[in-house]
Length: 529
Image (tube, rainbow, N blue to C red; front, side):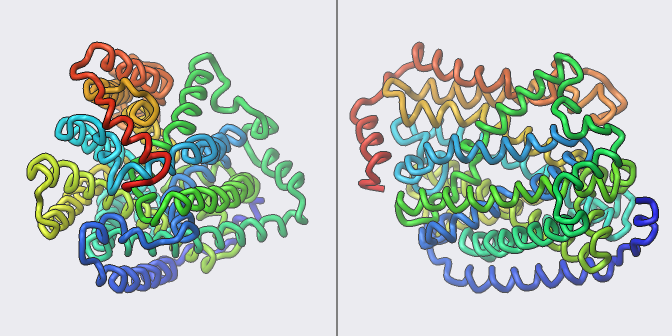
């Protein structure tokens, strides 16, 4: 293995940059052409509901297969083995359990944002404000992961080791992402997601085939080689390498699993994508296509992760500038040299750009539609002014994402995404389910559920080993952690459901039976949507 590593050529920054620049140029042209036809808020927010279920399903997989899926999960499997693959399982099961159950109902009930659903039979202004707050916080956490991936990737590919240099590149990524949103709106962003998903699936499949070829198309030989080349030995292939060391890590595993499985159905940027199709039938088709694409890709990450353990090794991965996130690019360098690394680098950058663009348009749409148009303007905003506000918000969100990415640079991005899932499940899931299925649910319950879950989740993260008191914490020099779990979902998600339940029982006014009946009919049939 040492001889193989010594024979691998050095990464060529010129090739990596050229391939990535080509992708950016092509997608910017596509975004420009698509965005030229944006003429209304429906075009800007929901692409005029003109995409088919197949197109939207592929775009959904592109939205969901983030840098965490491509870089973080591959690195987690290469370092932690079986326990790293739990991220893939959680992400995939989430679609089978959650979105197949509520995707159609959400599509029928809302129009542009999650706030449309939550406020349908509640007081508009306070509920829309709460929904927008939750959307912005979840989007920010998710963006941290993508920007951290950009910093680690560029450190590896362009040999930029200084914090300032990586910060500058994160700034460039943020600038391109904002351009996607400003120029293309949801229509342009969707086409970027489709292109990116197709390239990502193709590259993942090709890299998997190359790896199998190196081991005689024997998965057993690949696993054996990975175990021999790992400090964990055979424990790499067994559960408990990361989450079975003690009772705390076991609880952390349960909390992580809960956040991953329940969080997908509450991610605002995923929910918003169901409004880009014309009816509920196409929404169901979207989920089927997205699930199929992700099933294929996550099988590929299993091979890529163990392949990185076998051919690259944990020591080289950990010592690389991007840490665990460098596993897939380093594997590409070992397998196919500089050119394949350049292609994988472009795909990784495309993944980051596309996902952050989707997050940005979701955050900007939520603020412009829920806060500006329906709170400040009381539903009487001029469509052109609303779109202008959405574009200004996109710029502000981009600035915050860049700043957050600089702070989070170096963290494992699969882990950061798991935190975003926990925030989404804690703040949004209880209120979405209660709104759709509980007749007595009222405005007080909605506000208690959103703010209670959101505040609990953020406080537990702040006082957890994620922020301080651990070798891999964001602030390594201090220790103010008292909550032992790295993922707060085990506590914050049930707390959110409890807050929504208690708030409904004690709150005023009571539920409006006529609006509840209208919402039930619309969610089941699509009439009036």
